[in-house]
Length: 219
Image 1 (cartoon, rainbow, N blue to C red):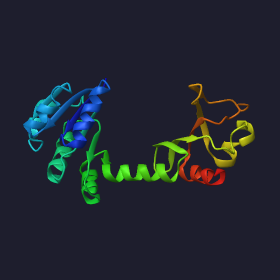
Image 2 (cartoon, rainbow, N blue to C red):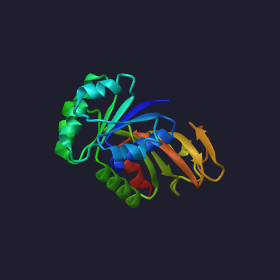
Image 3 (cartoon, helix red, strand yellow):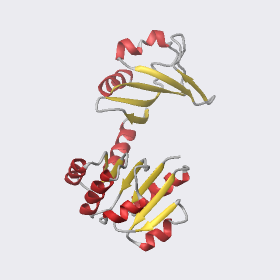
Image 4 (cartoon, helix red, strand yellow):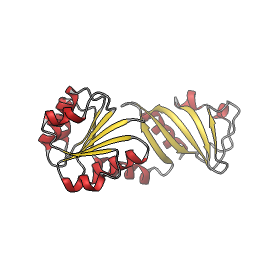
């Protein structure tokens, strides 16, 4: 069980706190509005009314046992920047902040935030990718260059062995696993003689540009 603090209980913060708690995590929710605290208090482990600009208040409830802090203070850019500064001093291991524009995000990064979230932008990109690339089911970025993707087995791959496809030498892509949707099987690191079938999902790892080239070739 991980320990999280969610600061700011607007729509985004409220739902993050609720879902983290549903998944069995220990969640502390903080907001300056008593109404928001009343809404969340029965859904999380602890909730408290407070001002994130008050360092002494934060010290009372937060220490370095917190695995991650999620900050979502809406249009109050100064509040989020100051909260990042204080949480950094308190030794919070990871600080994730919702930013409302690029400049705000840049300032938060300089202040010490580990990750910046632009919810509307991120959701828009996710939907654009899903609609324009129907084979691409899910995407997990590893770095600026590499990622892991779930990719519906292309028709051109179905019926071929991994040895024949030569994904590693031809595309510089590693096939980590195969999920068989019909039989609900999961094959980790399939052997060279494994025959790919329709209705399976390939879990691939590689450079984003290499994965992109493969997708173009197998369309």
